[in-house]
Length: 141
Image (cartoon, rainbow, N blue to C red; front, side, top):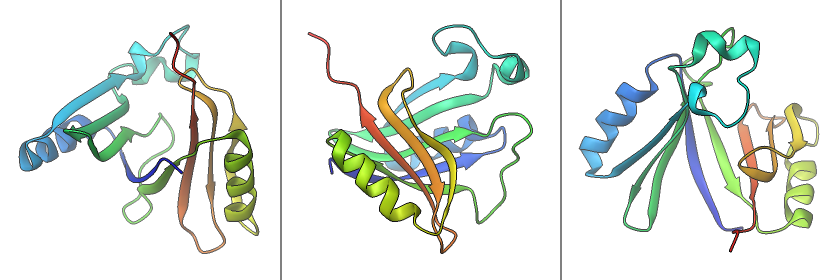
């Protein structure tokens, strides 16, 4: 594994929260809205163009937090608004971890290719903990 981080979910106030945390930690904020996603924006996301699709706070080489706003129709629920995010190092590792952690759990998003990752998937384990597993795309030279 490359790293494990906390991923926070908000219901429209992600930018406000992440700006607050940025000030608390003296960190650098990266953000991308749903409207800035590459390619055509799906119809169900049109109303969410100004919501944060992904944000991260870094301080030097340390990734402090990651976050996003929930898509329309998927409200954030306090206590269920975070995930443990794992960045994997290989296809074999992400497949193995997804299957192991997901045993007796619920898959929210099967492992699949996205515009940011070779593989990405989300699940809730048998104990109610939310997980996100990511395998980054190889760097293009």
